[in-house]
Length: 357
Image (tube, rainbow, N blue to C red):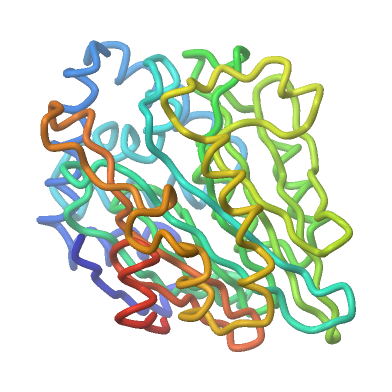
């Protein structure tokens, strides 16, 4: 995956969208075409995609209109129809109608009980055929809040930080309450948290205010007055739950629900290796404590290195839409208001180091 960078001071949402769509028109058109083809391969009809995208876009406009304006601005400048960008923005809502594959993400966050900034790491596992390009976006909101984030072209946010000392990681979940009604895109919930929240409690309230049709988990961390706080906010159409760190300060999340009530409706598959990745991250967390981001990446792999379960490699014997790999390793530097990143898995990050954005 090639990472592209945009730093913009445009605070008007529609104008920001036009700036993104003008600068990266080729990438916007390409990712839209790739996702629409992917949905078709999965057996999701164009009519269904358009219906979910339209309802999700309407839900977004009612809940947080600036992001709907940004999406429309991207489409306008890139020369494609608004629903084609909205379908990428609501890709989790569309994919909620199809079986979940075996891949996805692993997140681990340490909030030192004795004080100090959070220490975080995440892998982003996805289809490289869908995301040859990714976006590192630095923006300023209408209220003057500064945000830095990583995302796909067309989605609102995935992993990021704000200048109030808060950041988040993002993992997909599946729940039996997921449906095709087209709720607020979960990626838009992540973006609003980055734009407005300063604490875990505020992030939780933002998540609770959205009517959802798909599930996900935002692992939110904050650093204020020398104190760290973290929690995983599990979100589903059936409700939300907050999973706090253990007594050692660590909260780990993969792709299955941890809250007992929501876990009762979990529909993740054994093929996802979510439990195996969760247990691996729990097992190596002690070695990640008190380390730099690069050292943390090495410890995340443990003694298995590139063969660790958190380093996902595409099985080229499978069809392209069933090939998963770790496309990004990321860490949050909250005191430095920076997103640390390396395209590739944690072993690659450990050997090459992480860049700062």
